[in-house]
Image 1: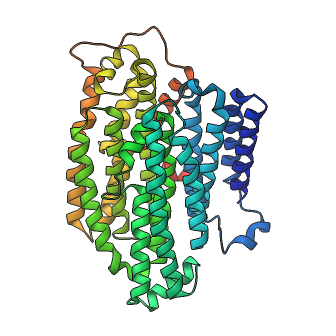
Image 2 (image 1 turned 180 degrees about the horizontal axis):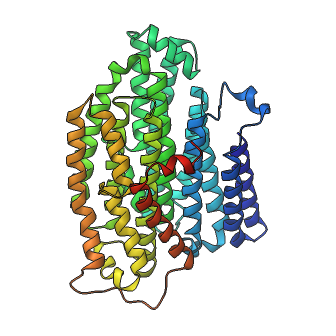
Amino acid sequence: MSVLIIIFLTAVAALFAGVFEQGKFSRYISILGLLVAFYVSFLPEAEFFNQYKSMFDYTVNAALFTKIAIVITILLFFLGGFSFSNHRSHQSELYALMLFALCGGIVLFGFQNLVTLFLGIEILSIPLYVLAGSNKTDLRSNEASVKYFLMGALATGFLLFGIALVYGSSGSFDLYKIHQFSLENSKDLMFNAGAVLMLVALAFKVSMAPFHMWSPDVYQGSPSLITAFMMSVVKISAFFAFFKVMSIGFFGITGEWINIVGVLIIITLFLANVMGLAQSNAKRMLAYSSVSHVGYLGLIFFGLNNLSAYNLAFYLFAYSLATIGVMMCLIWVEKLKRETSYNAFKGLAHTEPLLAVAAAISMLSMAGIPLTAGFMGKFSIFAQAIETTPFLVLVAVLGSAISIAYYLRLIMVMFFPKESSFKTSERVPLTYNIVAVFIIAALLVLGIFPDLFATQFGM
């Protein structure tokens, strides 16, 4: 709760910096507030907040995912100065809205009640509807905002209907009372229907196929830094909420919904990877790549054990770092070329080798190549699931193999073009080089010494 309050106050301060026409300081205020919040996240909660534990509890898992989300947000804000250079008149609003969305994510990490779950999802989502359309002169950005809002409203309807059925049958919003009810009344039709409706709603939120139809257009149309935020921080928040609801609240009726998740995983992995191969636009390819990773993450529901939450955290952290590594490169190219097609990246490695190397290692990590953090993340989730569902693990391995093709395509364009078209006198900002070095080091070190993740995040 302390971290949540600090980030909320930081968002307000960033917002008011714009009111007093000091928007250029909003990024520094935001980063400072996030650093303070990150430090506080390692401290035990004050006893005063114990009275709210029935609604929000800062558990060990909540603390772990909060730390990850804060680190990823800090890295994104480091990229904001260059990325938001066209938004000088309302930079403060963009940073503030991202922080408000992060507040929603933190609520989702610690929710103990379905009412808190709903509030967290809405606090997370509403700022994103505005952020997606923040490039007001771009029709694609406007379309992204409207499409995200409409699909988000539809998913919210499913969620509320599901919550109503669950409450009507169990008589409680409390997650652990619902857990107990699911153990004792596994054949309750109304309860099972509510669980399935909530599953569908949360599948929308994490963009699991076939409920992913909004994400490629929204990710492509949104400003690129906002897209990176949605692919990383929002994905972390939404998927952990999905995991927590299904693995705790509906644990007693796992048999009723686990096969649905299995089918969704197969559809997601097949559809996202095949569509990724068909793309000629790097940003849209990354959107389908993001959808495919939801398929790999879905395997966390199979073979649940005490390490499942940790394995999920490691994978999401590795994936988010890799996402920033690629999107950072895309932001730079988009600013110079005004496009994100594969051709726009030709010869980037000759002009900005550090940026290209960071993007290449990030994509190799996404593909699950050994000695990267992405490989260790996939290995831990696949190893957990293989005893209960070897077929799904085989499908996931095949999906990873397919994904290598579209990742390598972009790498080849950057490093081995037939004719380089990337010539510019403008240099990458220092902050981008710092983030690139951090991401390269983190992905390789965690790929070789994965236990460092636990030690660095206070596990």
